[in-house]
Image (cartoon, rainbow, N blue to C red; front, side, top):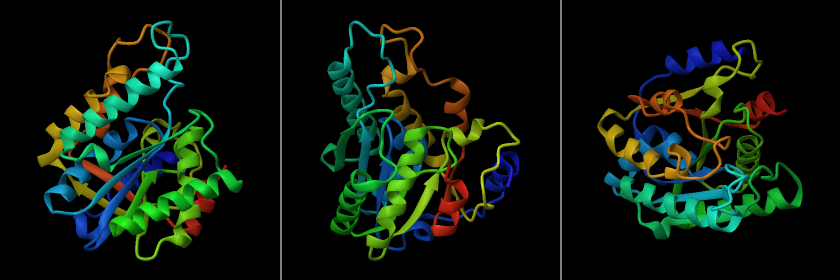
Length: 252
């Protein structure tokens, strides 16, 4: 399926609520970088917390690749900055900072396979079991970023270890794919109405000041554009159910 067809199909997914994703369980949100958790699942996390569900966030990479030329923010300071931003962001969503795990994998080198990926998958499965997760969510394997693909591959490795949790993908950079890109199977999943959570989600996204402002002294470095923020902070979030068949469709 072409990317433009896939994205159009996302817009037609049925609208459903939290129970359609996680049953009566909690959530584990797996983000390749600090900020993906808020961009992809901010509204969902607010709804889950309001419903009294357990929510855990796992940030895979250290985020140090966003501004490699900064003099004021060398890697360790940038890592600390991005972790602090993440804790401020999840607080805007109502999440206790103690519910966030930073794995500090190298930005740009999140593993896709082998023992390193398996070890992370086992860690995620353990977090899911401990919080009674009904769903584990991560970035879509069709996103055009190596770490987003790595996150999808890791959750695929975790899937056989999950006792009761289903797995879902949330697209981030998939929205800007060239329309003719082949992305595999048509999506199956839900749209979540997050109109009531948009303000909190937007505050969470903008808490990532290194990614949304000129804070870091590296003008060519990464900065989220308003267009993608507006897209991801709209009235809906999109969750595509994943399995071995969908994994194969988005694998490089």
